[in-house]
Amino acid sequence: MKQRESAVLVVSDVHVGKKTPSYDMRVAQKVLDEVAKRIVRIAELVQDGYRWDEVVICFLGDVLDGSEIFPGQATVQDIPNVLAQATVAARLFLPIVEASLAVAPIVRLVGVAGNHGRAGKNAAEAANWDIVCYQQLEALVKAKWGKRVFCDFNAPTVDEQGILKETSLFWLKLVQIRNHWFLLHHGHRARTVLGVPFYSVRTRALTWRSAFKERWRVLMHGHFHQFGRMDFNDIIVLLNGTAVQHDTWALENFGLQGINRWWLFGVSDKYPITWSFGLDLEVRSNGKVAVHQ
Image 1 (spheres, rainbow, N blue to C red):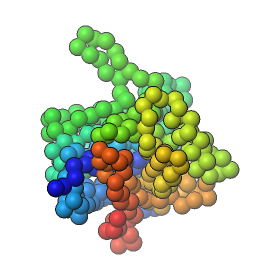
Image 2: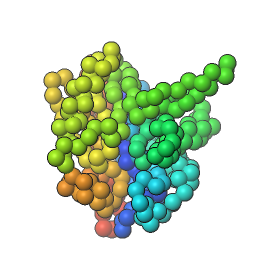
Image 3: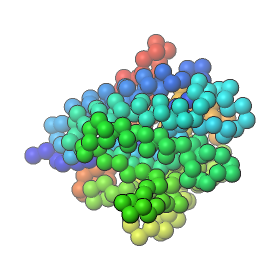
């Protein structure tokens, strides 16, 4: 009998609109299209032992490159208009949702905003272009697939009585997957120590564990453009990489190369992580995305 599970894809730091010697909107589209193919391929690899009830796509923010985040940013962008970034990015994620629906009856989209989405230094922190992108994505998937896709983003909503509902924790979100709680965080609230972010991430994980009544098990973390897993006590921290090719940000700030890798893992009723793949997003010199995971 096949074990029933949820598959979880972690998406972060796509920076749609950013331009490097080997990255722009067209390369971002190529990378995301390849991720969609990997989801189907991995579903085929594990189908003998597992049946996916759902695919949960967790967005950790910085899906857009934003605007005026640092001086001269527009000179290293192929889409300087941040509204255009949001519109383009929402459509770029559709193949991933479609591939997920091909291997599971239901897809859930959940997410938090990143620091690159902020509307300006003097704007409300919740005024974030990542959230605008998520809202556009929600409208697209609802129109195309209806009730097969559920969306739960930290975005302001108005109920039928006209009452506004919003959260101040747009950058932090608890998500329940099967019997387990997961904590989503972009990462910019964990400060660096001596240029290496890992100590700060560990400290934040320990303090956040006691801050919530839900005893979450896994912290998903973006922002640093690093990839890896840390286990301490019963806490698991997953650092998620970036889609940006030829990324120098981590090298400049931490002395570390940016890592083109995202997490895809399984969740059972008993265990928060049963199997995992690190999806390689690196675009090779021949223009093709790496084929291994």
